[in-house]
Length: 212
Length: 287
Image (cartoon, rainbow over all chains, first blue to last red; front, side):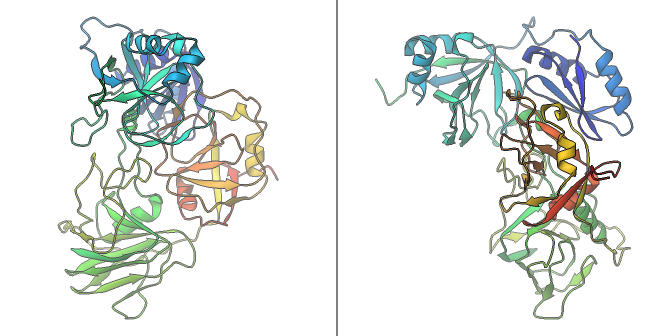
């Protein structure tokens, strides 16, 4: 894998790769100190935003573009901690629409969404909002054409290759499958984010206490 | 301690921000105009990054319960204490206990920094006393009746008695951004005409209106990191320049980045301002 290095103003460069897994691998490799002259790192879908020490943009750019031997570390690791379990009531507003759009029954959507172990590729959009990869490709749908002005906190949602749990109420354009019974963001907890990048996650279907 | 008696349109506590939590989706926040904020703290002998009050379009009134030293920088609000004569701007002022300080609306500029020697000492959230208007983190916007503790005296010299401030022209230097190739001559379009600052601009970003930028490609951009000063162009072709409360990642292409020393111009640009861009070597496409 080699990164394309794009300009991003006087103090940053943007390293671009071709998949979520490559972006996560590149982020971990850089975070371990592979290249000198780096101050900050921010992983995202296909990129790592690199904050650079003053005067070091040229050497960081050259080093990033030249390296091809980034180890693939973000895939299954020996001795990885058990996945975080997210108890989920699958009663989302878009569940039936998603089922119809994928040509599946609602039960099949729930089964396919709760079967895999996901990995948090990166966070963004809001504090504690983790973009989870590793989902079933049969559920891959584009975002809603019209976002909702308000998505309830703890909504479990999908869009494109990602799943996520909304950490708090916010506008949102993803398809709502249900709601999590655990808070993924809480300032009363240290660290406040339940799902930082690299965390593995399982959605566990549960029945709502108010339904039989 | 000081007690807020009136807050104006928006008054928040800001410091140097939360700079190391981007990987959790937590934005940096912090003072929108870093230059004016730094000067206010320097004038009262505070360490860099000490929490101060960011006042938007004036209107703040506060009562000094204890004697304190205060400086105001940024947008020049006419200010009086207890119905006295106008106070000096960009200078340290010593107020006695009981002083009632009123900031009127500034005739120009947008954000005023009120630094108190010792700093605004409210409990930090995730390592910062800044209020993030997007992430809704930190001490909430000031309301009448809020009592703000002032931190201990920093035991530093008060050795600057007046700071001559230069009025900046509404010109912003641009560096190239990562997605220039998503547009047909974005830098040319940005530098060839003035842009009007819209009234829906805020601490998240300065929204500009003008001739829409034309896309060269129409696919969706996977979310990627954003920096303060990034010039982001959504589907309507109207640029938004990111300020302190910008989201950590986003899916709209960034074509350029404002020079860090010009963030002060953006943070002080009132709605209606005609902003001009030049490339960072000082050339516009008209030359």
